[in-house]
Structures are given as C-alpha cells and as structure tokens.
Length: 262
Length: 106
Length: 266
Image (cartoon, rainbow over all chains, first blue to last red):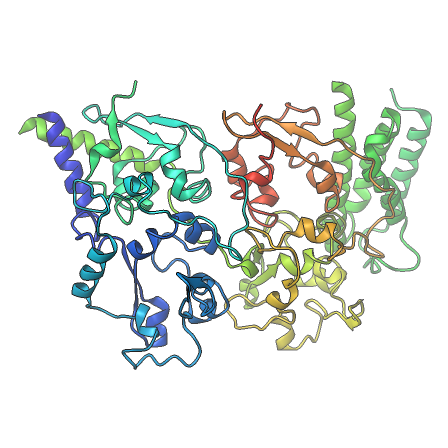
C-alpha cells in the first residue's frame, strides 16, 4: 500500500513537470521545437521528431560527432551554421547520400520559405501537421516492438536487430577503438519503498558510447559520488536529460527500479 | 649550512644587486640593449629549467638560493615588470625546489 | 491519510536533499563550434573601462607558438582573469604587448599594437570583441583546412599537425625568452585507472614537452614527481584540475577517452 502511494506520488510529480512527458502520444513523443533563431529570421519554427532519426542513427552520432546539445535551443543552430556544414548541415548538405539519394541541403541559399513545397518546409513546418506525423510514424515504426506505455521499445528493437542505428559516418566521425564497459551499476533508491535501480552500461553504450553522458551529465565515474533525486530527473537533469524527453518515459518505473539493492 | 661557498657568494652578490636596483625608475623595454642587472641575473638563474632534471643537488640548491635573493629586487620594479617577472621567477624557483624534493624521495 | 502525508513529507525532504548536491552536473553542455573551442573571455578591467571584454581564441596562437612561450616566458596564467592584464602592461611591452607592439613583424606584416596609445577604435575591437560583430583577420575554416582532423575541440589534431610539420610552433621570443639548453629526455609512463575495465593511461612526456616546459606543469599542476604520489580522479580532471587544466578547455577535451586510455587492460 505504501509502495503504491509513493509510486503514484512520484508518477504525478514526474508527469506534472514534463510538458512532453508520458502523456504525449508516441508520434509526438520526443518532438523538439526549435524556434529561437527561426523567430529572429521571421520563419516558422523547426519541428524535429527524434523517431525519424533514432531508428537510423545512434544518439552519439548527432549529440557528439555533430555536436547537438541536449536541450532545445542550447545548440545555437542557425541557417549559417547549417550552410557551413555544422549541425543539420553536417549531413543535410545536398550531397551526402542516404538510401542512394542525396539528402536535401539544410537552409540552402535561395530557398523560398513561402513556397509550401520548398525543402525549407520539411523542417520549418510551423504548428500543426499532427495527423500527417501520426501517419508517418505508424508507417516508419510498423513492426517495431512496443513498451507497456505504447511507445516504441527501441532497446528491444535494436537488440533484435530490427533497427541498426549507424554510429559513425565518414567525414563526420573519427573512429576510435570502442571502450568496453560491461559494468552493471546498482544504485540504491533514496526511498525505502522503492526498489533499487540497476543501471546497465552495455544497454546505454550501444546508443551513447561514453561521451554522451561523461563528463557533462555524470561527471563522477565513482558510483555513489553523484547524488540526484527524482525531482531533478523529472525536471530534465541526470537520467532525465534523455528519459522523459526522448528515451522511454519516467512513468515506466520498473524499467529502472527493478531489483533490491543491498 | 649545507650550501657550498660558491652559492653563498652568488647569493650575496645577487642580494647586493637587488639592493642596488633602482626602485621606481620606469624600466626600459625588455629588449633594451643594456639589460638591467636584475634582468641579467634572472636570465641566468632561470636558464636551467629545461635541464633541471640533469642538475646536481648542489646546483639546484644554489639556483633556489639565487632565486630567493633576486625576489626583493623584482618586487621593487614598476607594476608591469613586477607582475611578469615575479610570476616567472616563482615558476622557475618552484621547479628547482620540486626537482630537489624529488631527489630526497629517491 | 496520515501515512500519505508522512510519505509526502519524507519525499519532499528527500527531493530537497537531492537537489542541494551535484550542482553544475546533470545536464548536457553545449559543444562549442570548432572555432569557439579554447576561447577565453577576459574582463578584469574592460567593462569597468567601458570597453567590451576581450575574447582570446587559442587556435590561431597555438598554431604558431608553443604553450610554454606564452604561459611561461610571456607570463600568462592558466586561468582566465588570473593574469590581471591591464592596458598599461600591454603598452609597456608586456603580455599581449610583448608581441603586439606595432613593431614586431610576423608573416611579413607589422603586428597591431595592443592597447597602444592613439589606437583607433577599430583596432581595439580586434580583441575587445565580446558582443560585437568582428570579422577576424584570419578565417578559421581557411586556416585549418588541410590540417589533420581531430575528433573534438577545434576539430584539428594539433599533435599530428606538429608531428607532420604542418605547423611549427615557435618556442623562443627574442628579448623575452631566455636561451636554454634543450630538455633532457623524460620517461613515458603508464597510469592505472581506478575503474576496472578502463584501459590504462599512457602518459607521454615527449608529446607534452613539444609544447610545454617543465615549469608549466611542475609543480603547480602536478606536485608529485614520484609516480603514484599524487592521486587524482576523473571527477577532479573534469572539474579542470590536473590534466583538466589544459584538457578541459584548450587541448583535446576529456570526452576523447581513448586518446589517453590507450592500453588494453591487463
């Protein structure tokens, strides 16, 4: 009974502090709206759906090799950085081939934003379009395993090789010998009524390598040295940088809180 | 006193130089043809940092003593020189002391 | 009912306690663009003198001079603001003014004078550029084209660039540097990480002494000369201590794990 009350409280807390939390339907989950430079330039905001890219690439490729920050607006993407081959333009340069077709060039010179058919509108879509997104999402994620909240279970999809996210791209990544870290870290829960957390390095490093999380998000490499709370996590820090925004939502408690930790 | 006499002589000489150094005269630019005495001594004392590991304990001790003897003269210089050269002297003195200390550990 | 309140109170206390520690961590920082990496903003006296703060980019200078030349001979501290550079120092031929004196010729051109008397407004903005749109004289993209690529930082592998002779950083500045004997060779050594599974670190003195003199690192940054006498953690390095003095800000960043953790684990 106590356990239930606690979990309900936590869930309410987590849900309350997340705009795009567990409540967002799967096609909208992980959608990032980038409007700062767009607003300055007087063009519609950019809507970026993580699911389009995460089925194809690891988190590491974009958040390390390309260098996207992990909070909307933090990166400082502008038309000019894209044109110089950074950010979206690192791949979307009009030349790089994807499925044998050149990718459209991001923020190409002479693009006509007023033309609804222009390439500009692929990203600068503005509000609306939820119905079309839901349709595309259903098509792209058809046949992929789902978790108990109805989201795509990307972890299982990768483990079963139904998605094969690319981790390195020529001209963008400089390969390094992968560091094997097999350690499973047991983290004690701060609350007596909650199971302990079992953190798996291998499950995370498939997508992230070392450098997505260390040192920015988790500077300490010693378990127990960094202390953080569910409040911090639900407001987007520590595990909450990804979980609750893009990776599986915090409402799926037992996916992390799964064993008694001594 | 463990210092060899030569080091003592040098330290005394540096001290005298230091005392003789004019206090608040605007110093010439560092590249001036006739370098002031403190500068000549500084250049000499701090010229051994790159091969400090090859120096003997005695040489190191003497260099540390010369650094200490030079410091008062540098502290009397005009602001810019004082900031730059006391920092530089501190770095080379610390290094000699560091190498000296490491000898003791072996 | 009372029990529920108890749980809520305990939870609130727990959350508050958790929030108090671990500040600064927990979020993903923005990765600077290649030309921004190693930028230092100096504002000891600028704002107070109604000038824009100075933005110093390491990349251009580090391609041409060793770290030692500026941080030992010229006397720049390793921390922004710690040197306390004043306009008067520059005018009198110290710090920036040690080279930027309107006399020194570099690449066939006289260098501009740092904070020189009568310097026109435009010239001030070359360094006092924070918050201004200033087109740098040397374009980063053009300058770094053709240099070996690095994973992070400036996107340039400076170590390789020097090894291949594509850049030749000068280590001596006439009138400022002291003529010295070349450094006696120091040994490379391996360091064992505390974390199991992490490969050993191989520290190469040789690779470091190309850029640095002994006194740049010893004893200020690394106090112990005997291996194992100074113990430091990755957390401290990430905070900018020990290796992190350079490798968190200017030299290749700590995210490039395998560049130091190079050995297979025994």
